[in-house]
Length: 105
Image 1 (cartoon, one colour):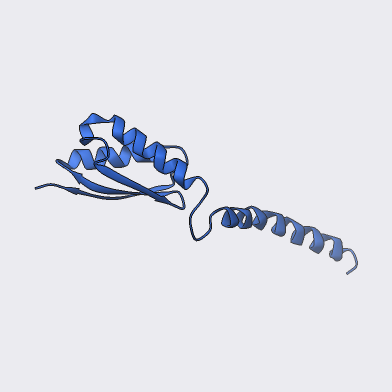
Image 2 (spheres, helix red, strand yellow; image 1 turned 135 degrees about the horizontal axis):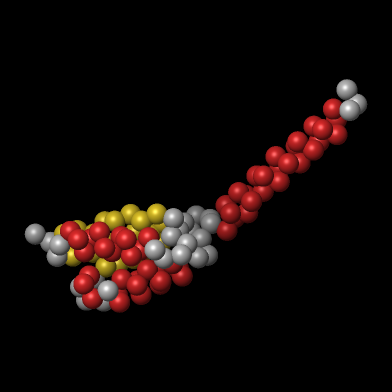
């Protein structure tokens, strides 16, 4: 039995070490979002504003919370909607894109 104690302690330490990065990530991303959210929003907005096929700059509003990008606004055709989402997904740090862009009829 005495030989099992060091083994159990080592297993416990390994399990603890495995969970600590998750705790650190949680602290970084609180209720108000992650520190990188603002930078992601700026990067996605700049990328969309540079693409003239998506309409005038600022026609698509971008919000980021917990590295999830939310796109809102209106475009003329469905392809523009898909293009905006694709552009947003390519920005470093983006984990997901929620595309709420409406297509004008």
